[in-house]
Length: 291
Ligand SMILES: Nc1ncnc2c1ncn2[C@@H]1O[C@H](COP(=O)(O)OP(=O)(O)OP(=O)(O)O)[C@@H](O)[C@H]1O
Ligand SMILES: CC(C)(CO)[C@@H](O)C(=O)[O-]
Ligand code: BAL
Image (cartoon, rainbow, N blue to C red; front, side, top):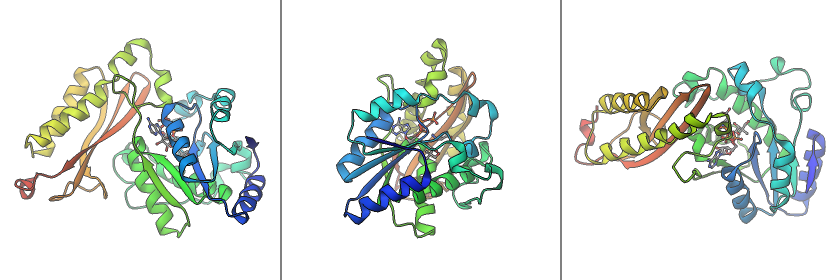
């Protein structure tokens, strides 16, 4: 397994793999790898001939300096986990390699649709940072396919749209969220939860499941359902940011007969968690009455 730091070295390696006819499967990450990341890597190895994993904590997508500063960085541990899998290269640029003239002056990529609400509303600038770095990573790694987790559901839709709009010759694949035994979505930020917070944390997923049950039982007053879910989260010790039912493809309000996803974000102490759950289509008989 190679460790590559320079953009040009990554491009030269990828160009030679492509010339040999190999399909490059790419898993972009910010490191501190857990089973969620490793499930993406294993699927990449099944679908591609050469797997590249990137590790780069992208300053451009953090809207809180403390979140960036405290983001867990565990390169040696990550390297060992990847070495045990079928990974051809780890692309690990530093900030100077990604933003040689400084991050402030770099060309930005904006995805105006899909980004103004939910994570976009609560993390201003976040998706511009994500779209910019994903574009740069794709230009470095030149992948045929790229794998992303559904845990970051809005991000997955944004990257799909980015790739389609800018004619990027890459297939964007979304894979299911991996969870701890108690339901908590695996996330690098979980390691920053204190012991009592870790015990409270599964309530986020439990609340999303409760919303799904109410929805399937015929509850169609979305505002009331979202407010009740926020209250449940607050009772469980969270500072909730949003719980929102959306059309699973467009993130617009649910439309008759189309699949729905419920998305949530909430803080536990200093740690901000997100999660989501697909909960099926709108009820055909009540669809027109969704409020
Ligand atoms: N539990 C999970 N199951 C499946 N994929 C995941 C999971 N957690 C993260 N991923 C995916 O791994 C990729 C890299 O994510 P990232 O490095 O930001 O990890 P993370 O655990 O989401 O960290 P954090 O949420 O704390 O930023 C993304 O495509 C993300 O959606
Ligand atoms: C896609 C990504 C690697 C871009 O920095 C990041 O947002 C992540 O890890 O989900
Ligand atoms: N996992 C998404 C990247 C972020 O939270 O910045």
